[in-house]
Image 1 (cartoon, rainbow, N blue to C red):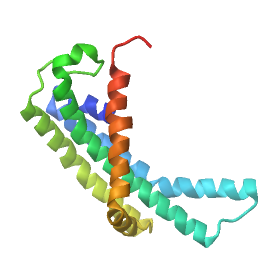
Image 2: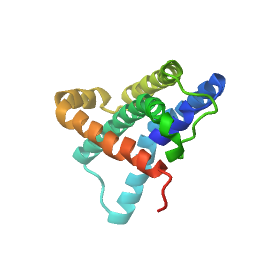
Image 3: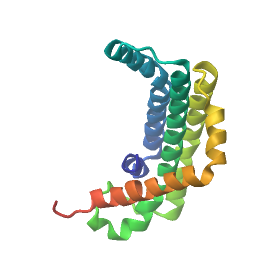
Image 4: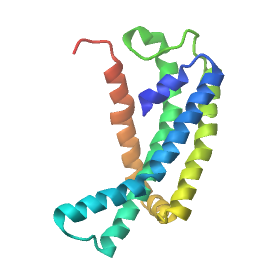
Length: 181
């Protein structure tokens, strides 16, 4: 996620950035909202392979997990939007060490803020659309999951920050280092 967002942060033309982010978010809405459809397909395979129907309780838990997956994906995406541009801004003086796709222009704080706001400005409405479709049409417990996430904010958001830092930011930096492997 972070590396892809870094690539979008380095597009030289703002109209290309807008178009790319717009198309990416259309795909993300389709991907998130098709989780339930894909899940029904997997349940059919599960039923044939194990010759067992899922119980109502298992199906309710499954819907809860799908809603949590969608919300976690949205949170991670938006964190990646914010972190990616500023990571590249901070590391641009050492860009010879990395294989990040740096633009021809010098990245400034102002351009990084603008690109971040453009990406968030496009992503957030699509995220809200994903959540609305999931809650209203797919009958996923999106609001219940969000309430539970807020109630357990230290465990949930602490894990997200840990994961994003260790597997996201540090992982991307390690992968992008120009060292022999």
